[in-house]
Length: 69
Image (tube, rainbow, N blue to C red; front, side, top):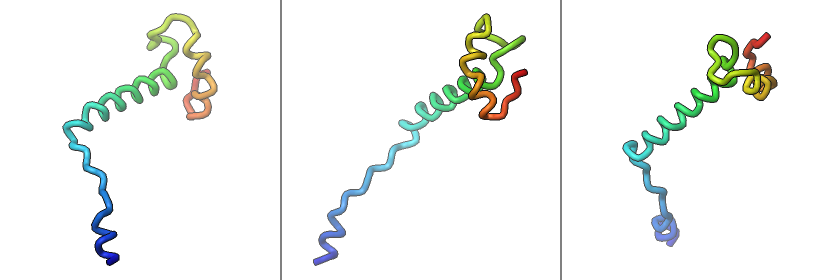
C-alpha cells in the first residue's frame, strides 16, 4: 500500500536548455552591467557625466573591495 502512495508523487518537469538560455544570457549581461557601475563607473571610463553614479554606489564599492579614491 505504501508503494501506491509513493508512485503518485508528482515530480517537477525539467526546463529545456533552449528555454532557459535566453534568461541566463540576460541575467549575465545584467550582472556585468551592475559590476561595471559598481566597479568602474568613474573617471575616464565614465558613461554618465558627473559624480551621481559614483556617489550612489560608493558604499557598495567599498563593501565589495573596489578602490575608488
